[in-house]
Image (cartoon, rainbow, N blue to C red; front, side, top):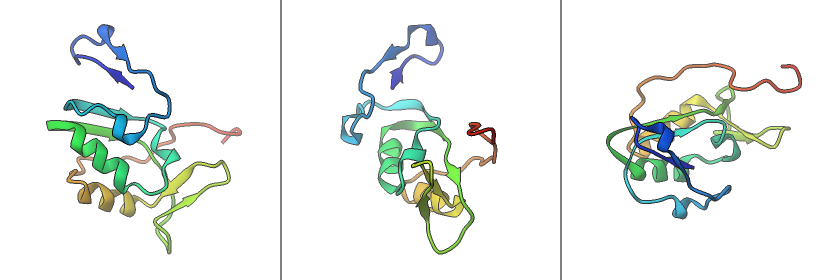
Length: 116
């Protein structure tokens, strides 16, 4: 977790704590939260998205990636890699429940694994 003035990223400060507990994320409001290749380690999205929403400053933005699955009988599943995939509809619903509004959603490949 890094904190910084967006105009002076060279002064970013690392906040130690791989595996931070959600309640240990600082309460100060953030203008931007980026969570790339992190939420794949969460199955249920309700709590983490609520924590992020609570930490955003008014007008702040949250950018995050997830692994997706087709809509079906489940909201999320654990994959053979040990990561989790969620249906886009589930993620959108949990984000809305947390008070977040979707600006855009783009499908892309954030990582290559085993040549795929």
